[in-house]
Amino acid sequence: MNTRAQDPLAPLVSLPGVAEASEAARSALATVHRHPANRRGWPTTAAESVLRGARASAGVEGASVRLDADGDHDEVLSGALRVAGELTGESLDRAVSVWTRSPLQELAHLHLLAASGPGVDAASLGRPRPDRGVAERLQGLAELVTGGTRVPAPVLAAVVLGELSGMRPFGSADGVVARAAFRLVTVSTGLDPHCLGVPEVTFYRDPAAHRSALHGFVSGDEEGVGSWILHCCRALEAGAREATSIADAAGT
Image (cartoon, rainbow, N blue to C red; front, top):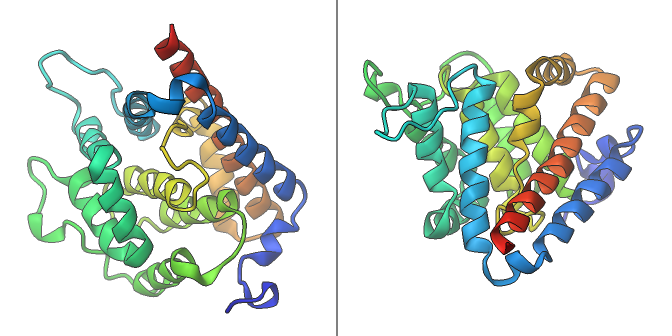
C-alpha cells in the first residue's frame, strides 16, 4: 500500500493554496449534487452539462461552438460531441470501468472518437506518437490513475489534464481527449459522480489564461505547477456554479 512518503504527487498538496482550492472545488461539487433538481433528475442535468462541456472543449481549440440544426458541425466540434456521447448514460459507466482498470485503453478509444473524420489516417487513431518518452509518460500517468496516488481528486484531475495537454500524446485532438480524461477522473473518484460540473467553460472563456497556466505546468517549476492546479480547481468550482444554473433551469 502506498504511503504519503511514497506518493509521487503528495508534495503537490503542500503547494501554496492547493489544499484549500481542492477543498473548495470538492465542496462546490458536493453542493450541486444536493440540488433538488439533481436528486432524481440528474440524468437530464448531466446530459446538458456534457453537451455544454463538449461545445466549450471545442471552443478551447478555436473551433466553432455552434450547434447547427442540420447537424453539420465543425470537425473539432463533431469530435467533441462524439466524445460527449462517451460521457453520458450507460456509456459513461462503461468508460469509467475501463478508465479505472486500463486508462490507456480508454484514452485510445477517446482519441478514436475525437479525431475520426474526413482525411484522417484510420491507422493512426488511438495510437500514441512514437516519439521518445511518450509511452513511458503515458504509463506513468496510468499508474497514478489506477492507484498510484492518494492526493485529493482535484489535484489528480489537474495532473492528468496537464500531462495530457502538455504531452499531446496522439498529435491530434489531444485537447479534447485531455478534457474528457479530466472529467473521467472527477467521476471515477467520486468528486463529481454524476458528471454535473462544466469545468470546460473556464478554459473556454479565458483561453490565454489557460495557455499560460498550462505553460507553467509544463515548465515543471514549483510555482508553475501550483498555479496550474489552482487554475484547474477554480475551473471545477466555476463548473459547479454552471451546473447550479443548469439545475435551477431544470427545476423551474
